[in-house]
Length: 65
Image 1 (cartoon, one colour):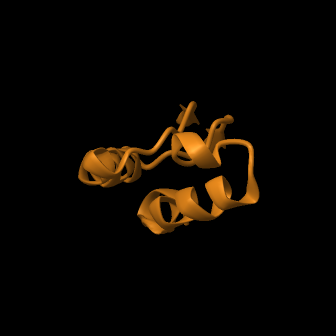
Image 2: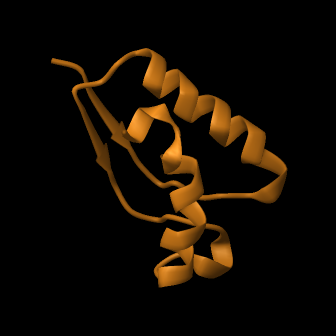
């Protein structure tokens, strides 16, 4: 079984492409389970619904399907 723990999903606009690439790397290892931890979104949105909404677009890749 392959388990990925995805923690502290801080987002910075200048790192969006790196974040997309990391999510594709996760998808390529074909995990059986992905466990997302906290701190989703950019600094001003962490802990708010807006942070989850911001992070959602990165979770729409193959890794989270």
